[in-house]
Amino acid sequence: MNYYIDFDNTLFDTPRLTKAMLNSIVFSVLEQKSDLEEEPLQNECTALFNHEHIYNIYDLAEYFADRYSLDVSPIIKNINVVIANGGQYLFLDAIPFLTRLKANGHKLHMLTFDGNNLQYQLSKITGTQIAAYFDALIITSIPKYELEMDFSHAVFIDDNPRDLKGLLDKGEGRIIRLRRPGNKYSVENIDNAKIEEYASLDDVKIEAAQE
Image 1: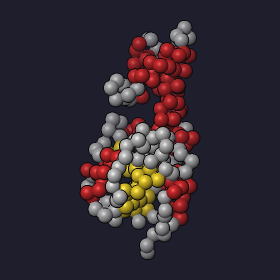
Image 2: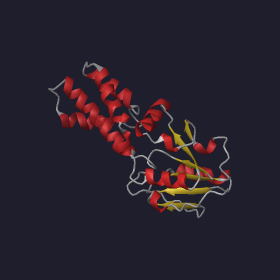
Image 3: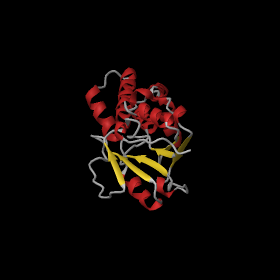
Image 4: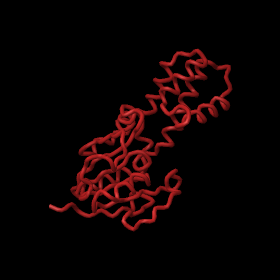
């Protein structure tokens, strides 16, 4: 069976990575300009990193470098160190789940979305060293359900209600919602019996692949 598995907030604790990257920017700025106060800088950094302002971590680094006349290179270097050590931000159930799938003979496809920077998304994945578990990596800048792929005889696992609902019209595949406590998407209810819901990957039932 083909499994299509989301990355952010499904296998990977993206908010924890974001916090670490923002902290690295603050640390890098203070290294070069020690007369600044940490708390206001931290608050500004956090407030700016969103879709309404600056939603590219490298653009945010450039913003602070320009604002305070700093060398941007060490700021970016520290961001990349955080990303390169991304394995610590995998959810604890991620590797055991992928291992169970492989042991049962399934094919694993990572299917992940990034509408802004595909290279950044690949860097995040590479930093976790999780790619070795997958038969294919698919990074898309369009909604997953708009891809020309056959999901009808596959298992799709995601946390995003938009993608889950969009896949309902793609055939009779198995659709699994990972509804982790605290996830920004978990507050939304989906009233559809075709979508299975689990709070952890440990709870997802796996059958042996058919020969």
